[in-house]
Length: 335
Ligand code: PMP
Image 1 (cartoon, rainbow, N blue to C red):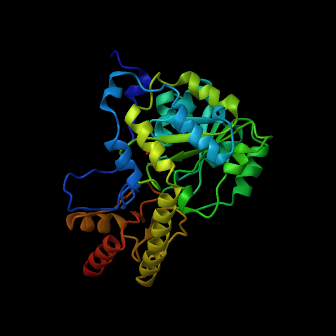
Image 2 (image 1 turned 135 degrees about the horizontal axis):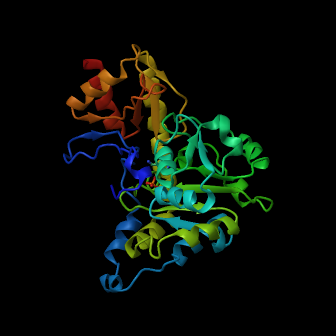
Image 3 (image 1 turned 120 degrees about the horizontal axis):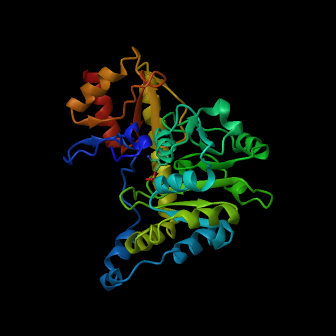
């Protein structure tokens, strides 16, 4: 068979369902229920379609400048990807030798295992993180939503010989983050990664970014496709990024809803892990998560269920609008 051995045995990543019907209460892929900043619509409306005749800026300088300015670092310390998923794949190319391996928390974002399999290297859990070539530390973690103090991550980074990527896809919903560590002058091994998909309400745009030591960031540039972020995505992401006020207000709304929703589940006997993200990971009183998942789906309410042994008695429920959470609670009460 002309297909590479590593691909033949590959178990591809399965993303959450994207149902066609708009009536579905969609709480399964950690998208944001609120619209992006109005500045994004304005950027799209004023986008000169004639620009698409030419290739986009291969190094997305305007967007990098904005990110660098806000974080008080140089543009050489900023990378942008076609979603942060692309940055993960590029990191596996740039930082891992063929006999090296990738580590992450466990459970964590299940794509990490697939990234390692595509790169044809091993994946290991946190016990083996110390000797890994690349550690992907998700904070807040997914699917649990739990948060660790950035001081703990810093302690790990100090003695670590590989490259540490702190995956902060959900950091805007948390109380702190590791950006200071990524930008500290003594840092040589730690990158912070963010996305526009969650707090900026732009999952469909596919833009993520990474900030860290210039030498590591340069390695990502070396292995990327020539034009990995299209011209429209660059323009819209820039507009979103320049409206921090909108993003902050949006994230604050999600946090408020999260608090109220978690309390409502607890009242109903659920065990809810302490979340600092835009979802909760919760165990129904009887642990019958698979059953509840299916029953909710039948009623047009989609949440996420991971059947692996460590996650099988919980549901990951994205925080939507107050109204969506109310519908979910009403459905649970009627089961
Ligand atoms: N990291 C984590 C922990 C995630 O949950 C996700 C979203 N599924 C991503 C990265 C990828 O986000 P995106 O590619 O949309 O930037």
